[in-house]
Length: 83
Image (cartoon, rainbow, N blue to C red; front, side):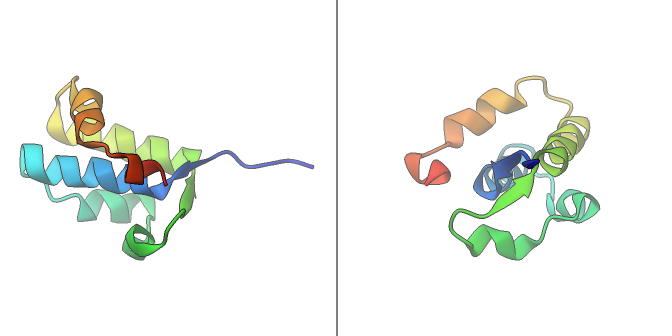
């Protein structure tokens, strides 16, 4: 049996919130480009496949151009981010 590797959708929305708050970048077009349903934000424990998650991170990095993006996202994380 094959299993698909996934990531918590909450982490993607934490990244999206960081783009908006720290860089004034609207994350909606990037989420749409990756095919992430915005309603996943409201579904506890929702997951997305890792390919989608990595694509969103790549697009976010391209959009902001800041190599410290991951650190800024991490600073905004709270225990509830990881359920």
